[in-house]
Length: 345
Image 1 (cartoon, rainbow, N blue to C red):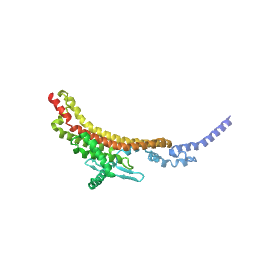
Image 2: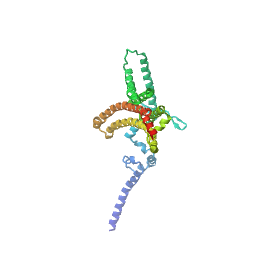
Image 3: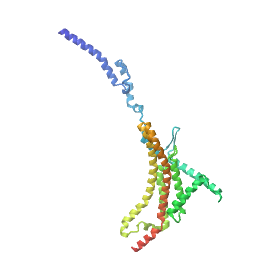
Image 4: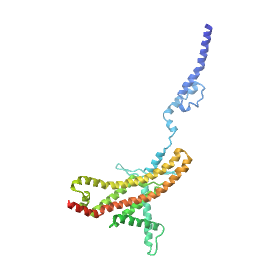
């Protein structure tokens, strides 16, 4: 019986002697780098435990850099439509625009600012060329090419927009309406050109244009009716008992018109680019050539062609509404009835 116990004790010691190196080896692997755990050969406890002090600081810092996150589709779309100080010309590189801060105000040059300068320069060159060619024309010669196209657009704005909505005295506002129309049109078109940017997709630009229309509208109303008639218009021709309601409503109505101009142009130009980029990214998200050929490419081309139409349409709508607001502010027909109603009360 004692001999059996001695044999069992010796067998137990042999098992412990065999398992001890394996247990020590496992403890060494626990302190090693997680990403190298499967690749380290299990020879001895000392061989694995030796690199542990060197590998431990690597766990804290470089781990995130080892697997950089892919740029999301939403980030790319927002980077494309938002204004920034980098003009990208992929794959050729990019241009970092200067940052300028004066008195705490950020007046940095951005890509939308650059596009505004480009549009202004193109308009000056085009109208200078067209004007010089018109001076050389005789009554027997007809305009051709660019001159003919510009004449058709100018005549359309003069007759069907300015004269139709403002009426008598429209000539005083024709220069502004023509400038706004061609400026917005060219901004919209350059936004569809590769490496271009849509300046009218910036709400600051559309708000500035709407502010010009607002001040011109108020000046037109003051010139047409005078200060007394301008203030009387705020009452809406109602009984004095209702002035406490009508005056705030009419006053707020003065500002809703430029706000509508701002949001309409900004939203339409921004939405078109978001739709095109979203359709393109669908094929990358789904990782399907079938989706790309059957949906992304055809629908993107269709929306792109639609954007060309929208570029002209939004320039026309902004100009037409500006002329309509000026015409309503300077109209005399309703004003005479309004004065008669006030005198009667």
